[in-house]
Amino acid sequence: MSNRIGIIAGSLRKASLSKKLARAVVDLQPEGFEFEILSIDNLPIYNQDFDDFNEVPESYTEFRTKLKDIEGFIFITPEYNRSIPGVLKNAIDVGSRPAGASVWDSKPAAVFSSSPGNLSAFGANHHLRQCFVYLNLPTMQQPEVYIANVTEWFDDNGNIKSEDNRKFLKSAIDAYAEWFKKTKGNQ
Figure 1 (cartoon, helix red, strand yellow):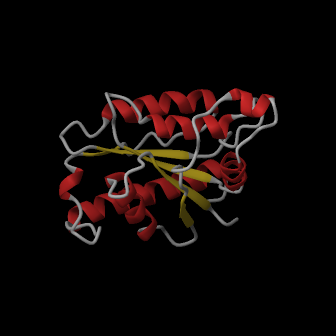
Figure 2 (cartoon, rainbow, N blue to C red):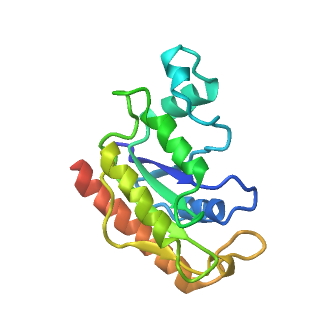
């Protein structure tokens, strides 16, 4: 088994802190895993008419096809208005359609949330988990990954400045890898 894990950052900004975290997660991938950042930048807002009238945008087809080959996911989300960013919800919706063809089904997931302040995007983390219940995306419960003051994490080159922060992120990634293997039955 290849253990292909998709990393999805819930932000569009070029200088996004979620995208910096995504790159750091890829850099810390455990041996035996293949982490890949999956872009959600070019997905039009989901409209069921696309599927109903066979007018599916090429970006949807490419995204859905890529996700079919991914075995698990780490979602990295900021918090917008105490919830998940619209762009992340849109990507989840695109992957869950058409009805009965969800690319998310039964794939182990983890949620890493972050914010520039002290709340660590707690609301976004839990709203995302609510979506996953319906989508049958089993989600790692422990450790919970809430990153406060994320603006202080990175240097000008996007590298994690603090060894303690790097160790924390690595321990969360390693915990996900172990949980993924148990969940998929390949310890």
